[in-house]
Length: 346
Image 1 (cartoon, rainbow, N blue to C red):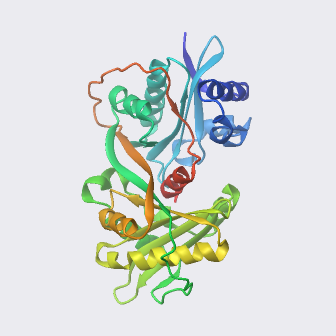
Image 2: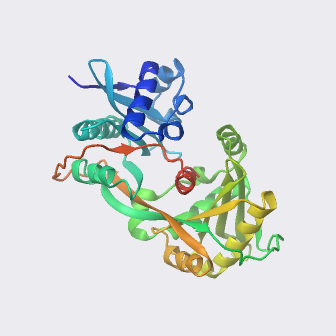
Image 3: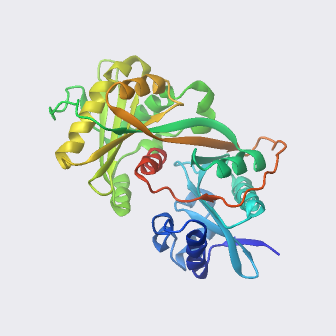
């Protein structure tokens, strides 16, 4: 009989071996001890009320004490009403196990108060997308596309434009207003954040340091009407691969090329051999325009990710089961994937 339980320390090596068997050579970057909450702290974290949880939680499906698959999810935002499923690892012929794991966490956390579940999946993982959509009633919401810089058109002027300044902890409400207006109306219900999610103060800096991120955040200030018209976020974990995320109001979209140029110069000032990756969100009003700018300036598309959403309060529709031999939806570790993680977490 299959049971679903919080992951145990003895399950970790077995899960790693499962990945090695299905896809040799992939496991070191996809899963490891450091991604799990150490025992006994994991037990304490499991007991916390939903709105106090702040770390990833993992569950395994076991039969005869042997793990058949793993799923993990983490809060996405300050209010803890939206959680993202960030890892699904299944063995051979485990489609049913995958459905059980997804349904389990959706019902467990939905019953505790989670309103929206989010999964961002590389379009190359077609089996995983099929499982979430066909068997578990997730719906396609939007896409995030990753662009890589592959040229040298950008200028070498690293002077900060007059209209930019470093982000301040007092900017939270204005950044929330900017982000809300930037999202196309049909996506706001599922993807809206809160002002607290934009509080980039001391706590945020400490968390980034713990994660090993070096971050740079700048805002496009418009003091004439007391608004912020843009946010530039840059981060790196290795000082070689840098990821940038830029949000602009529709009225200020023409500043995009200048902000990309600024981000490029910040990156090159840290490491002249660094690579720059930029994420474009289809659910933002300026997404199409931004993609056209990057395509015209020696950027190349290097990753496409589907955003799948499930609103817990909506009735689940009929599903069509489709058998597949193997599904692995692991933690995302490639350069293209890292910016996805940063975009969602920031």
